Length: 448
Image (cartoon, rainbow, N blue to C red; front, side, top):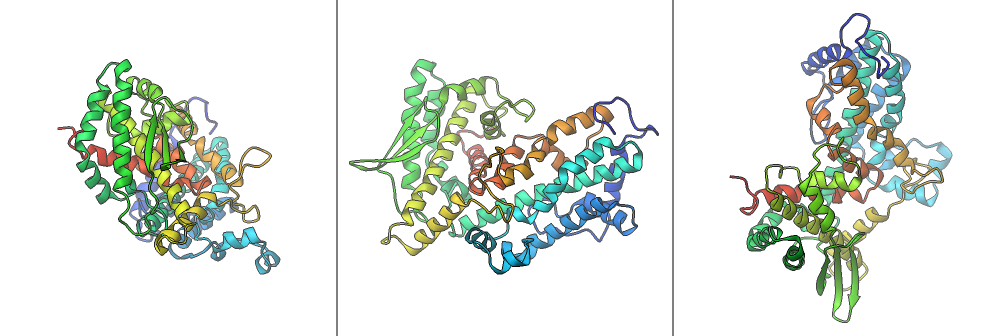
């Protein structure tokens, strides 16, 4: 198949029709690999590829992909450290440099499925170049199996990071503690209503009122986010919000104590809410993608409520990131609790882990412009475009699984892929969906 050419293959049957048949048969296969990761329990395309491999119908590269994906599901269940799975020469394993030692001691995350990620570019090339039905069907299965395993991979590492946080092993913002967040937002209903009301004012009056109520919300957040294992014991003395600020929010200090400066670009948020973007294809910037994700579930709300939801979620995102910073600082204070110190230390390790070039999981940009991790993940970012071309050519989706297809074309994918390239993003990427869901359960934002 050559993407962009018109028509179907030489027997008139779209390759994805054949693929759908393969996958329907695979779903009924009792020998399905059980993936102990969140989300779908099986990888149907992998099951069909296993059958083809067992009947010697795959080439060597396709068979290797199958083996690597199978190994990912095994390692996701059983591997305790990178040392259990890393492929290293004997002399390096026997005398590893310091960065390799640190990497080998970590719980597996990126390395769990990095060998599969390496195979995606050649799998796409093979699919695009296929010119007969059998080749197209097998190449489609390979791409489906790889992408499904990457989705499971992301869900696995996000769930592991969240579990660590919720068990107090690292800093867990209140935004990722569902019961506490619901209780907090329930207490803040009057503040939420005030923010919505302020968003209904003319723009020249709106900013100061919204700023005042968001400051109250952020201050109340810090005052209510201490009582859980590993919580940072430091608390800011004041919170300041800049409604036209751009860049990263900061944690500073004055004579009263710690000062949180939250930067909210309210002007562009209002513009986005007037003309919201809902799909990945519509979003032109990473900021658009982030805001599209924050507005998921608020499609039927008024402009004023969309804007209020966006401002509240971004405020809670910013204070959550500041809370992690407070946790890291708490770890350096001997008088603070042992749990807070341990959680802060673990959080610091996640925030600043640079990876290892020897392990092929370096997180720092190279002279070529991308880190080792980003170079492996980058082909995933091109999948929405490739899938659209495939669909236009054959009038059928490339990805047979509806959940995978939806994920590939949603703003979610680029934000979640970032969690593979940047370990620090795995917790932060889960905050907006959590706060959005919690807001929709409040009286202020519920749709009756």
